[in-house]
Length: 431
Ligand code: ATP
Ligand code: MG
Image (cartoon, rainbow, N blue to C red; front, side, top):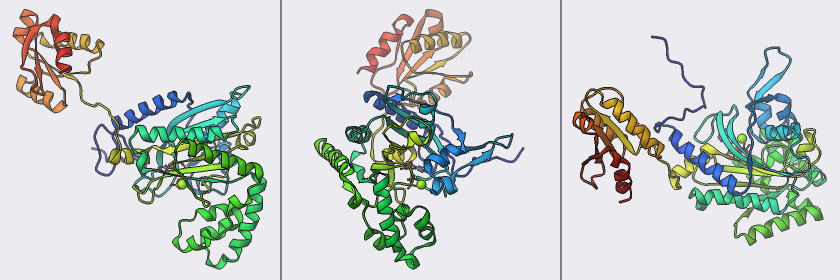
């Protein structure tokens, strides 16, 4: 026997059953994906799927060289000809916009798009933080807002409600203003933080000059006081940014969506401006952010497209589903409706035919494979969780009948003409 090969650290299998340290099953996940595509459809958003691998330059240019994601978390490798640097995508927005620009989708036509799929970041794995994780994201491209800003918040709130976790999530918002406003704030921030340079940790010292806004994002408890008293970006907003933010907030008020204004909310990627937001929870320990997003009005132009104001968000599927599993609701069926049992020569073929007919009527039928005793097969039927057992043994085979057993005990076992099979099950199902 060869030695066993294990999955890569921080990358999970989705199994039919729960694992000790990873409670999400494939069917739970599938039910979520179904919910998501119905949800996106309700809002008129169209799905987009892009490759998992992109040229490294795409992420460097959009996410930013000095961010943690590009600076230390990407899986980057040379293509076989060594000339091209490729990376596994660490997030979805860059790829989505690359595709939109490449295929000219914005030509005379704003776009409301959604996507889902795996993302890759080399982080320290822990609960709610993985190296392959999944995001569902939406991007609204070519809209100035602030109505669309409010729409996508309402859209996310709608999903939380459907998943039964609305009460466990808090909306935090902020405005990052435009480029000039950020530059003015940045200068004030650097001046302020420089006064405390000897108190900053190594990460923050480095960021002070490369990406000072991100110092405000620091989770280091020793720096909280300094960060809280730092100049607020919102105090540097000009008239039009201020108006955008005010109208956005007024719409949230009008939609009865509560929020907290967090002047320190800056988001980890470079491309954001104006409206930014996060949905956070106190139920997942340190991995508190379930969904985050904001405006990135300059990004499409940065990627070679005609300028188009845009906004989007991405949610972490693992975090969201851990929350849903614990506190929310998501209906799905793993058990078959019917377990098909057979005994004796020729019975298996007959039962396969009945099973096939039932499936075309929409029933979920699990056919017993192999030739065990009736008793063993009925045990399997029980363990499968099926509501009904369909039994064809020699007597049924010879007189064209079937035996039906309601595993829930609500109806007495019957043997009926095969022509009545579907009707009987239909009746039983409804009471
Ligand atoms: P965090 O601060 O938790 O590292 P982030 O700001 O890096 O999050 P984004 O790039 O905004 O995350 O991605 C959007 C969402 O994707 C996050 O809010 C989170 O729910 C999820 N996410 C990000 N990184 C991971 C990861 N390594 N494992 C699982 N989910 C993740
Ligand atoms: Mg991160």
